[in-house]
Image: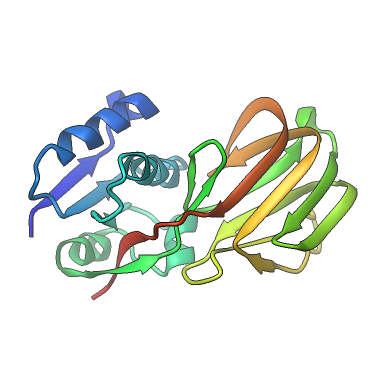
Length: 211
């Protein structure tokens, strides 16, 4: 099984460089598995998401993806993955399983957590639906969205400081409003948008999960 390590370095932190690294690896017709090795720290999940987005855009989600971070992340918790030496061992010998791939309307993949927030630390004004179920209308502190390991694909809830809202499961979570900014894997994009949707892509990813 041709396995290609995709290791994050300071020079490959940008999306363009990451996509170039993925394209270079895919030039080998025999490649069947990527082992994603991020730098240790808060950006680990964001790097995995960039690799998956590059595969999605290249229409190569048939390639298996193993995740080998040094430390626990939100994505390792969501997908039940190990980290450190155990993650390296699983990446080399484990088996892949089809898992829902969650993306947004900006072609960004989500593997950990996203939030819809109000710009400039204001309350979010608008409404959110999970599939056909309304999560809120009016104003709120924010909306939290996470992928699921299985169908329907994602879950969303109100992001409250003390008592978290109930999770709502669905294939898509859409927020419309007047002052939305989007946080992906802990990184806020400051551009204000009127609508943001996270939803299950029509092709699953092949994530190495099983020993």
